[in-house]
Length: 512
Image 1 (cartoon, rainbow, N blue to C red):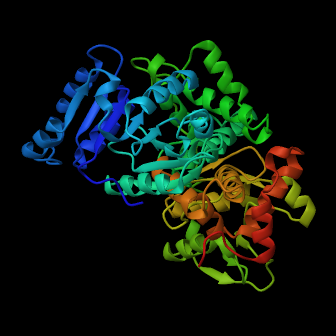
Image 2: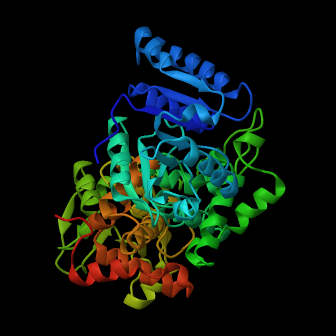
């Protein structure tokens, strides 16, 4: 089935921020749109607000005044559900309550034609459950937009057990025509994004709970090394801890208490205290008038040593740290090959530097009988990283650690030393994101391409988790996960069967 013709009328139920945004998207794509809300006057108020927002976009040369007039002319208020009888697609965007939603769809089945597609913008309710008991469950589909709908590109097209594949294909193609990035997903708890994103929050929360680093430092590392737009603490402050915690609990409960999705006690404390983030003025950070956001903890650089005089040697196979070695050379620091160094090691002055493999520095130093060991965290791109985490074993001298800090400072990279912890910060987060993404693919929730697209366009990740795992090396990611699991002795860090399989086959998630 191809996309809906532009002549098809679109119905949107719910004139809140999400419903109004969806209505705007459809109207911008050329459809006549009917907006319904059971609260008197709310639909018209939303359209009026939309007009004001669009006028601002005219001032910024995003639209012409004529285009805005055309968009607004396509928007109208439906005063009753009966006025949606001529629609080709109805998108429901109301409260996340299954009984309320089902009552709406029961009514729509008697109002709309048999060819009308019924879609829910739900982020957490099973499409299969919503369709259960309907006369035509095959026309029920999830069409999950992300807020704000006019800006965010992703649309999860979610199929329940009864959803007709042609219906899902039509919604997919329609979303494409609306300028969106649609992905197919099966109706499982959290769909793609709300499931795969859980470790992004969970690992930072756990690192904070274990006093590995403070919130500001962890956030800064995820941005400066990981390339994420926001860290977990500032992001959940913006989302609202009541909302984020509720989603985590919902996914945790839906998966029968699987500890991969275990909610965080420190976030629960915030919710219990009413510290919900920006909207209440207090979350992990204070947003009260005059409050200053704390700064990341940065290692001060000793001026006693000139980085240009520090000798650097690199093993024949340096692996994922190639970009860092190249950056050292570009900064005028001489780097020579050393056949005596083990694979993956870089000798900086008296320090042995290696990318974390998931073991604590103290454990790795003991296992390999190393002295002056310093572990470096993963970076999205070592050539452009601005901030990075280091940890060291107890036997590492101040002089050796300072040699590494001095060289990184020469490259313009800030250093935060974190408490010796498995997989540091970015590597730990990315490995767990990749693990959850791999399980989603393994269980048929989405394809590898679909998962990566969803995470890039739904939550603005700098790279899809599975593509990121491939760039690190799937076998290396599996090693990190196994070491995390051994360190904690918890099922939470078990490697996905798909990651294990691909690691053994030395393959990739994506078809090359």
